[in-house]
Amino acid sequence: MTDASAFELSRAYAAGWNAAKTQGEEDRAPKNPFPADGEAHKRWAEGYEGAQGSRGAITKTRA
Image 1 (cartoon, rainbow, N blue to C red):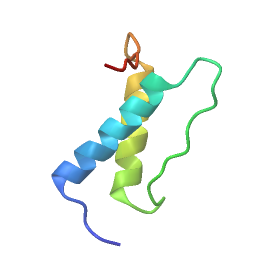
Image 2 (cartoon, rainbow, N blue to C red):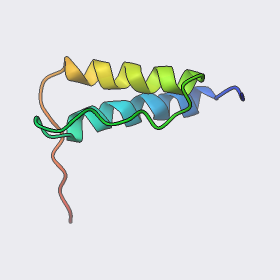
Image 3 (cartoon, rainbow, N blue to C red):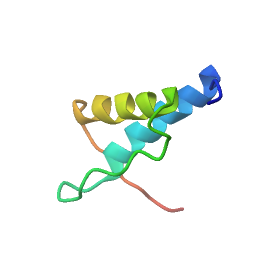
């Protein structure tokens, strides 16, 4: 297992946040893409859970 940098951990948190905000209400929770024994896995889960309690949703738009 390698130590993740602070930047990599912040990206994992953001990925979890974005996964929660972009899923539809009827969708199942997305699978955490990081290895279960790593810090990035924990940070993704924190981001995902944090987004669940916040208001609003991200809407994807294409330019």
